[in-house]
Length: 392
Image (tube, rainbow, N blue to C red; front, side, top):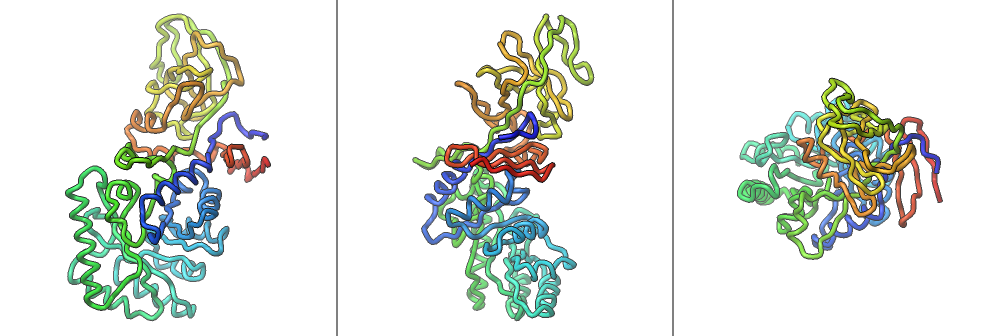
């Protein structure tokens, strides 16, 4: 393997597959899994992630935007793709031509999408978003919306395949989540009473899949849970096991001795309390190790925790390696395991004041991605160079 940079991210597809299997074990056999792969599959490389998940029988995928959907369609002809967010009317034609299912949450968009599809002589699949308490997008769960959806259901070039809502505090506020679910189900039942039977009802996101199994309905939308984050909720289910699929690594690029009182990095915020040894690591906030972590985290070198010191730079950061027998070129683990030590991504996310979902999305495409399959490194992708190397 020829690494194109001395910092990289390793993504374990074996763990991804096992995570999907664990998710499947929580739901009924007939429950549809709509794999959420927005934001470049949460930063892990959407094409390889989708290919892996598709290979184990998942055919439905969801993204946030139409450009994400078209990127997938250009690679995968046969999968079903749903855009969960807003699509402006000037992009409707692209959605119809590429067989992308869109989310609809207002009458005007539905009418314009129907007109666009009719001009192309095609029928487009839509899912209806229902507002139940997130207050983001969706038809209000009221009588006016029932009438609007009844009108939409008569449009000849729209196929209403699904209807969904989104929990705002699954796993955090049971009472509010129960209220949202009841509001959603009551609305769906009223539609059914009007003769509008929508095949796929879905409301469960990652945390809800674990916490409210009875709410899984016709489909579920696993997102960050696929990649290994449950915020500790896996303890609620005996035998449920998932693992974070990524490790972030680098190499030591420079080592130097500094005297007591010398300063390190921008702003002179770190002052050496005694004579010590500083190693430079060629990874920084532009790669996803956000500046808020400055002086708060450790890295692993030679199986030991070494504290990061000074302000994290755009492309580099410094760590104190006093007493560690290391040299230039040695492996550094920022997220992952080395020896008997481990640094979880949740540790970094917590210290940055973020959730794992957002923290993983920070990992830049400047970091080459090394994919592991069948316990072997099998593919290297460097997006900055458009370079892919298959290793076996």
